[in-house]
Length: 359
Image (cartoon, rainbow, N blue to C red; front, top):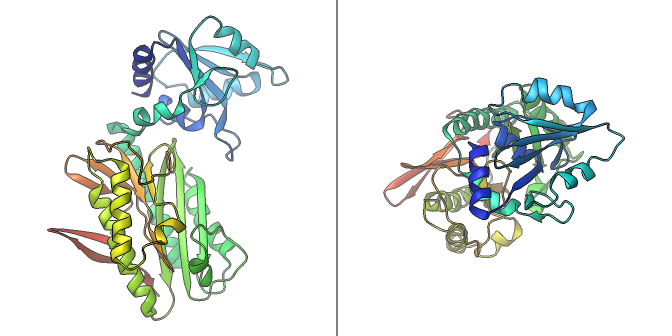
């Protein structure tokens, strides 16, 4: 599917080929295969040079056999190999291969045009097989976050909580792109809190962006030990309403900027007109935790089979799930049915949104 879309794009734009170096694009085109060694970089150790009639795998000889045998053995398309010893520069061979041709790329390379932004609408419209893989991932990720919230105890540090969460997904071959943990006052102070040595007292927020086969599931849950303070209960309902407005507005044909604007309007109705400025509000997901950060001026329109993760936040709370846009409306891919929920009414519709788990 991804390869066909790439080739249609090349023909439409009158390009001769495209060099794909990013991990997410490699996974997209190969049906979920991996080209990475170092996880903390967008670039893998094997590239694909896709032309109208040929595909070339570009890698080092030290990676070649593993990539071919373990990743591309059932990829579904033929390819030729361009490889060099790890101590030799292969970039010049790539440049020579593209000489006299209109070759573009998904990341800065030589003097070729970077067209990665043009690939966003192509890779974000998910196929049936991608949706099947995505649903599995989203369920595993959400259950891991929820299990973490149910297992942790006061006294554990944020690092320990993040370690417990990460083990649950890594054990199943899933990569952790983002694991955020904040406890107590840090949830109020910071909207993007990485884990620290701070121990949990009563209140924890657990956030996960989990990647498998290039696709990324995004989910947030909160837990509180002892009776829930009134401000948290009120803010939990408020942020759920903001989240529901944004989710309900995510329909084919609407611009992403309109959705953000509707969310901002709901922030105002809830009495927090400027809180949306303290954290990005999320947006289009799929082969990235966010393809880009949505703003009120984003003009791209929503299409069927795209996935979104909105993440509004207020003091002490945040709401985030991964949703899929389909013919019937939206489907919450990270809804497990095993959490505590609050019912949010939006016109004639009702939405089950995560509440704070009280233990």
